[in-house]
Structure formats: structure tokens, C-alpha cells
Length: 250
Ligand code: PGA
Image 1 (cartoon, rainbow, N blue to C red):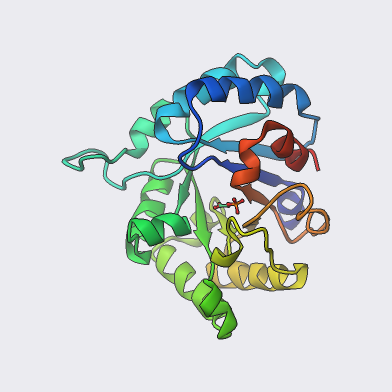
Image 2 (image 1 turned 30 degrees about the vertical axis):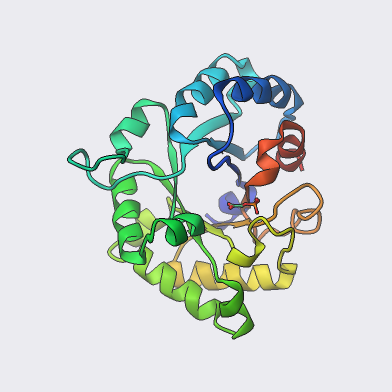
């Protein structure tokens, strides 16, 4: 089991609220030819909702290179359907070809007031729909400075994974994303990341733990060889086809 896990690696592009359809096509035209073969690698592109179909279509038309990547969503509602204006259901996302969904990103926790218990409903719903949740956890700069990193990670995991059995936990990807590292160019040292990953694995009883926060071809140079890091989640660097190709080809 452990061997299988350590060989598999996920590379996630979180495009946030960026790009138009034309820019998606331009990105794919440059990105796909740059992909090298890497057994056990999964590339997941998470665009905003209106671009999901366009990304799916570009990947389908991209031949064998296009098959190397798949599409994911940045959020979803936990109910199958209902009076939830502005929300998107997991069924609707599945119809568009999404197999993965980002949940609990710190920007949504901050700007949309998403609580751990709400995130839990979404994780449970994603598993119910046989989609892979990419659960984001991470501490703020104050929490880190006051020595609360591990306590915060434990609290976020316990709440977000409440009621989920150990078999289902193996299907979840957890992205450790320190909030202070997102979009700042700063990243923790490798020891701190590996310590956080260990806490996440033990507390969450999860196998697959990724790192996110200022991921680019330079910052991940010395993280790439760690067998404890099962992949990377990139924000701004993933918007650039050449940079994201360098990351996934590492
Ligand atoms: P960043 O964003 O790579 O631009 O730091 C990561 C994220 O927010 O997921």
C-alpha cells in the first residue's frame, strides 16, 4: 500500500478566477506539447466553473498528451439540487467531466466564511458522488508565529473529516497550504513541511498529502525529491503554460 502511494504524484493547477476561453485554448496549445511522460503522475486543472467544459474539450482534443491531464472544480455545494442561488452541485460538475474538487481553500474560508463544519458537508458529499476531494488546510502567519501550526492543522482535519471512515479517507487528497505562503513567494523549509505532513497523515488518517503555497519550478527544487510529499498545488505559476509544465515534469 505505502509503496503504491509514494510513487503516485498529483499536480494541481488552481486557476482561481483567471482566464477566458481564448486564454484556455492558448494555454493548452503551449502546455500539452511540453508534457513529458511520468508514470504515476496525475495532472488536474481546476478552472473557474464557466471554463470547465472548455478545459475538458481541449484535453479531449489534445490526443495522448491531453489524456495526461484531467479537470477539477474549485468548489461545490453539498446538496444534490435545491434553492441555492449561485451554487453548483457535484452532479453538475460530474456531467462536465470533473473527477476532483478543491474544498476548504483558505480564500474561501476567508472570503466566503466557510467553516470547518460546512467544509465537512462538502467532503462527505464529494465522496458520496465518487469524486476526489482535495481538502486544503493550513495555518495563518500569526498562528505559525505563536506556535499553533500543528494544533490548527489537527482542528481543521478533525472537523473536515468527521464521520468519514478510514477506507474513504484513503480517497482524499489533503493539500497542506500555509496561508502565509500563498501568493507571497515564501515557503516553509522542507523539514517544516514534512513535519506538517506527518501531523496531517496521523491526525487525518490520510495517505495522500500535497504541498501548496508559492509553488514554482524554483521553490520546489528541493521538495521534489521528498517521498513524503505526494504532489503539489500551484496557483499563480499554474497560469503560465511553460512554468506549470516545468513543475509537472519535475
Ligand atoms: P500560489 O497559490 O501558488 O499562487 O501561492 C496557491 C493556492 O492558493 O492554492
